[in-house]
Length: 517
Ligand code: ADP
Image (cartoon, rainbow, N blue to C red; front, side):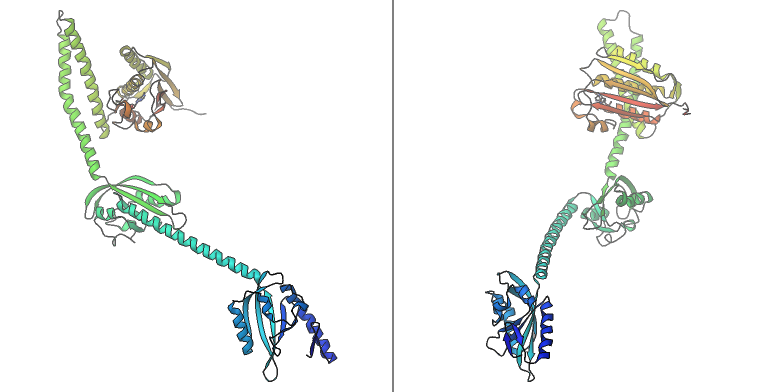
């Protein structure tokens, strides 16, 4: 290499010149930028650059030949890579680094620079060859990736924090709840229990957590029916509700426990869990039993003297002197009516306790159902002038059932229809046959019942709140009716709208065989 001529090398020998010109063409074809600097001249000037370098930097050969490479960094001088370059050049060593460079138009590009010395036979560095690649895109992608990573890390951190806070919040609720709670893994291993559980069952955390639910205590939860229900919770999302377990538990003895189990979903962060809430209802059930016993004893005790009083009233009515005063006759008649009312109230209470103990006896015999309805209607119509009771349709003249109980149901539903529609003037009864069922329906245009209350009125002693004072009653009529209809294989239901009225209907199965041919 002798001299530089317009950015191309001049050579004295022709074949060498030819070879080198080929080499230069090859260099120009490269996508990478290539420069040569002369180390023997002051300030290491550039003596060659290929087309790739022109493409990458935007400078043309004539702009840069003779310059030191530092113009590529413009005034971005504080990069440590510059010092690394200087050191490598001074030591005559090769170096690879990534450095911020600027194009002719001032725009930044990241240069992956490979600098390598070219030495003479004595080992002195004469030239440096620099190969450059614009890695701005890769750098940008890396920076974006880094940014994404930071954002993700921050999000994970925030999420973990909020999860931790939520868990602590949940844990504090779980610990304060006055019910025993167990959290189970999907394979029904106990993950945790609250302190109320430990206190109730007199067990320690260690002997509970990590165990299979079925191994706890003396296997108290290892009940096939419960097992079946629990194992269905996760796949079907059907909770276990009000499951009663009566068992002789270790440490605490015979108890009645009420179980409710639900699936807890954890927003995909964990596998789903099962939460079991256990309530000790031994005492509550005991009180209910005593209340029922009291009811049964009290109504029996009342029944005996009342029967005697009823007998005496009847005797007095029979022995009534012809010349008795009107006042006396009226008082005696009223006494008879009130004794009868008291008698039916006590009979209802006795019915409740019989139903409770499963002692309700049905004497089934064929009777004319429609005729019974008409008779009840006639009696009620005589006693209630306020309403007209209209009967339409027909059901059957022969139904096999307990006539006195069915009469009680019809009487109760009709009395309620009159009682709870004080501002209306009619009640409608509709008799029909639906498939092999008879259907009885009574409609009133009274106060109606809200949807919420409709579910509860068939429970014993339930009365709708606001009417308690206005209408006398014990809230057991519908409970008894429902039980009687159920005992006959039928069903009783209500459809109602507040302030518009109600329709109470029941169906009873007829014993005829229906042919569908
Ligand atoms: P009672 O009438 O003695 O209160 P029931 O068991 O017969 O007891 O009825 C339960 C409750 O249902 C009543 O207290 C009343 O609130 C409501 N109820 C029953 N029948 C009707 C009706 N026809 N219209 C509106 N409410 C009714």
